[in-house]
Image: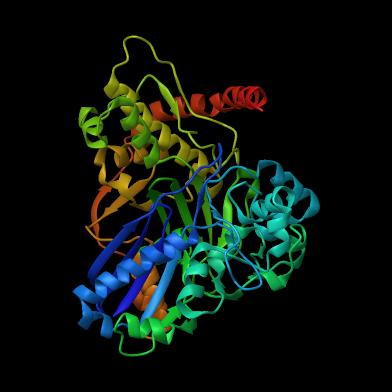
Length: 492
């Protein structure tokens, strides 16, 4: 048996897998983020730990015999969060999360202090990354900063609670802006730009590497028979890639979760910062990936449901089963700013082109199209305009909407594969990494691709119409940027 744990923003999820990679048990504990000021997003790490303990305590009561067979445990989790520890390894303040935008000004400071940042880290500085957060703490909470001895990402802190040692895998470390991504090691220069040194960092490992064993007290608490090895693990998207078997050069997938991701596995380090793409290490050796991120994907439909007072399912039922023309309004889904290609924390969303004849169903269709356009915008640097990426798997809650996936296929001129029922997310990938860490198989044997349930192809006529609308979508950004700057100035 193998345990995979995904420590997400909205909850802690655990999967228990057997040797045939069947999900034997699944448990989730919900979490809430706090926003004490506009643009802030924080969580108390202790809430993660208590949620994980409740899950495993429940599992012991309900499936004690299965827990006795567990040999490995893997961790996946939300990236970029800053857990700050003092000399006694006590948490100094709430964790600043990936979707926190307070450190906008600190991004410029970081890149001024470290001019080679984009070349070394493979990424533009953005407020969501870890490095600018530490500059913010140094500038605004100097008493806290003076006490910082270690900085851990969320899943690394959970590992510390589980085994008492500090490790970080390379895929998650790539999202700090402190990693030399090409050479897969910490960058002393990047750390110095934040007033930190290598002493503040955990040991680096590959995601499939063994790290440390579960504490004896926890083995006893959860009724496990033997020592349980913890894998290096992975950031949430890299773990999803492991779960999907996206391990070979060119393997691609789209995730329609709260945020949206388009991923391509690469055999080498390929930074493309001019388009705002991320270039990170993969969770397995000798692999990297490129990734475009749109911050409001399924959350855009959730927001629209809240505005209308209907459920997401009710809204989707109103959209025509077959789309023959684009909706008249354009929706720009910048509800929480945008990552790729703009790396803009100030920008906000909008509907354009609304008149009295536009009904709710057409507005909903425009929301689906706006997210599709944002994914295409994020993917331009991956080579989709040149036909270099023509196929991808689609996962996440939004992938359950056939009409939404068909829209994305036409907007992006790609063949998209929706998968047979199953859980291929971060927890599943983490469990696969746990199995690799204990030596129960090789990467290509374990990280296989799931079966396809349905494929969606681009509609040529609709694609041409979407090309025209996408051009208008891209031209709308500068206007909204000016509006965002004016609003920011007025609210200062």
